[in-house]
Length: 231
Image (cartoon, rainbow, N blue to C red):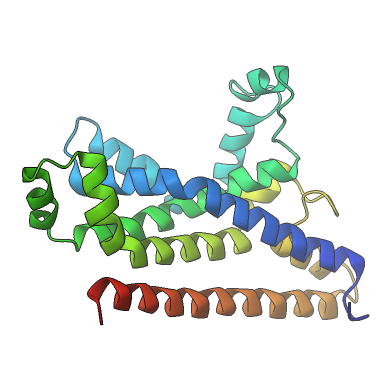
């Protein structure tokens, strides 16, 4: 490892990557399900669900983190029961995963939903008339067509999770080596005299990771689109 990266900086980078990957991977199946429901289904409470999904985009991130603390903290109305079985989220890296997933979820759902809405419903209806079950229609018709949108949504969620600060620091604090993610580390370095060089290095790392993810996403999306179109 280069000497110009301190152990604390490396830990912050590694933890951010770990949190972002887990947040994206765990929320992706639910994101696809919710996006499909909002794009293709009519049901009571649809607008309420849509509002709840996008609420983290509207609320201040600190407010979202506080709500997570009230809900999943050790004395929260969900967290107290999780604590009984040994699951603790508040002030743990697993809580950072939850906070990042909640904040990134609206961007993921929106990207996937737009992709689903771009698919001609007649293609799905044709498969249904041939006797295919809804799940089989989704897996064989819808999923290949919306795969670029899923990839885009996952990358957006990953990038948002990498940059999440307000909800994370409120819910899990800023404990070096345990809950200190990349944005939290940047903030910490900016609060101490002479910390600007370390903060700047971590900003460069953030830019590199984000650009790499976007370039990879673009390449994979185009490859998938070419394969689906058969060209």
